[in-house]
Image (cartoon, rainbow, N blue to C red):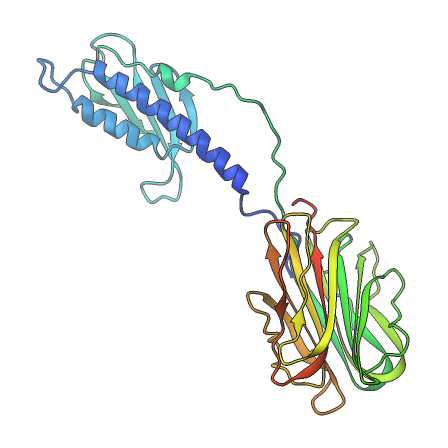
Length: 360
């Protein structure tokens, strides 16, 4: 399984800042090179040139468009790095320079090759505008690191019992967020008992016309330095069960669950309630317990969400199913309601969680 991941993207603020800086730089380059071009001899003049000054300026501007970093930047020379051009999988080094002596050439260097004359008999070439500095207030940009679903484990109790052992996710490390969901057929009696170190989020049951049809318990913990290999979730009455434990990284270290909501009803598309967040880039986790086995295995059917699981305690009557899926909410606010998809109408319990990131 993947370990805690490094960021591979940038925030909108960072991209806009970089774009603005690049725009200012290219504006300065264009202005300075335009001025420089007016000082280069014209092709129609009495002096000969290795390349006409308009073409030379065009080449310089074209190269500078691909500059990734500068090695040298003075009023009369510029050296910089560009991406690979010759297919050797290495960046290129380009340099333009003029000695400052009237009549001397403007030269061009590519990597370690000897300098060549780009324009002969130059009267003036001034890149002062390139060396001007813009003063700006410094500010720190905190990287946005999303909550990441890493893996899950599951367990099935296919005959009536009062407890379910679920293995710890294999790659669990200290500080990871573990969320457990236990779907129990009918009535569990007392709420499911949590293993030591776990915290309850919510336990909900569907009750109608004197009968219980499904129970869903949801719990969380932050993994410690030494975790048990498996955890036992217990209840009172003999029932079947399906349970799973999900592992997340990138979460808030002390208060990962920002909000939750729960619902219970009797539908072919079990409603998953909305939650409202106050932090950007939350992960919205939708969980469900469904009476019987009217499901498509591995397909929770939550629109625009990534599936985690959809499975059952066993096939046939008197069993229980459970499912999970998630999506990201880039901006704080209402995550909106959604739904699971079953193959027939069934009683259900659903719970929606908002997991907030450490760095939103």
